[in-house]
Image 1 (cartoon, rainbow, N blue to C red):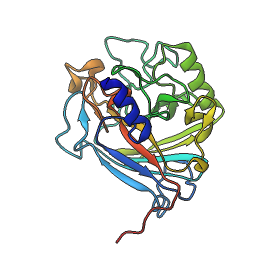
Image 2: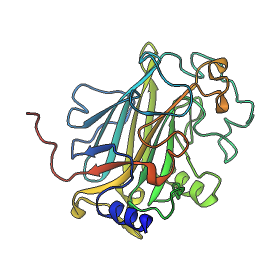
Image 3: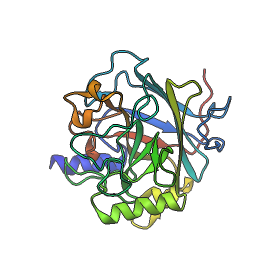
Image 4: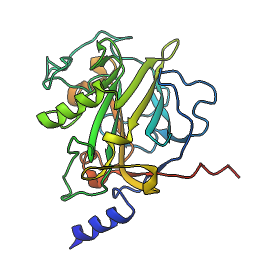
Length: 285
């Protein structure tokens, strides 16, 4: 009975149980080039991390080590995110491209590789607002998905060029194929570039309503549907020198999440909520 109630609540208004909400209002179309131009994101809503986020590995104690300022908006056809990441050490740029002991194939652009191995951001969306069990993860289709934007490797540019990578569940061929199609057809786009002088990087990310936000079988979000809540999680992954991640999976230094618990953050039920709004962002009072 409890899960039926949760399902009903999720369908009506909440897209996950974690009490964190982000709103995307209509705005101008940004240029996806890894540069945050003055005023380009002024009409977006913002978020700050990783203070107050959920830590999976070593907790962050200094914002110079790792922090992020994020932005979100839409232009009626695509959803846009930008992330301004502060990071004191950039993996594969300030360090050698070392490999984790548990996967010598981590940098292969195959289903054996680790798409999230590196300095990276992940976006996870549940467009349907539904889950059947507490442990249900993203399906890898337009209804729920988990994708990666890595600073130093990408599907289109290969190792050494930042951009999109197929995320989870990459072990399922159908999900892998769907994600690859989205990248190759530019249904989803991402630019990732180090900041001038280092000490961080910029990510700009575009997500097409169709085919990436499927609110019901064969139906994709449009502003004609009005305001809509969707499940949302965001991850920030940080690799530094290998020894700084000793004891953590893959020697990750940090991995911090917008919502969830350290072990359940990929479960749909544990995500926060993204509201896509159809009216303009209210003016500040």
